Image 1 (cartoon, helix red, strand yellow):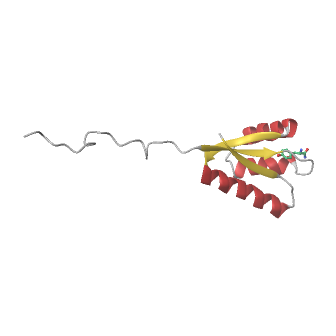
Image 2: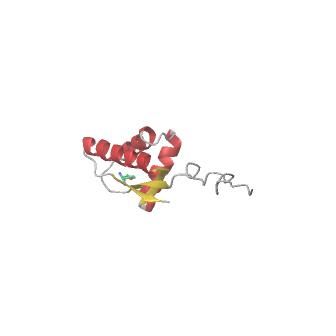
Image 3: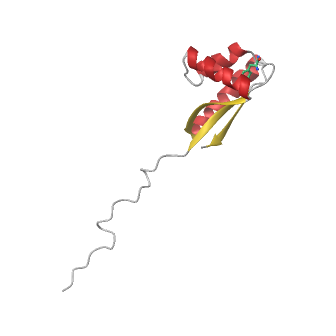
Length: 102
Ligand code: TYC
């Protein structure tokens, strides 16, 4: 009698829960009205940057027009964009924050 085995018995699971989630870059855009201090404050509180790193990123955005605050899974990136939007609105600054897939 030939041995019948289920076709996929010895196959390892095919990576579903092993795959890394796609990451999204969160970007800050420069403008002429938001204060440098407020941008540094946002980078410290929303993105958990040190004073030095926050200042470096803020100056990079100020000079280049746009800069990366960090890369995160989609829902975390969306939450950070929303946090920046509401902090900026609360304080009356036009600061813009967007995200893009890596
Ligand atoms: N350009 C602003 C100024 O001179 C500072 C600034 C930096 C604004 C970064 C936004 O994302 C920004 N006050």
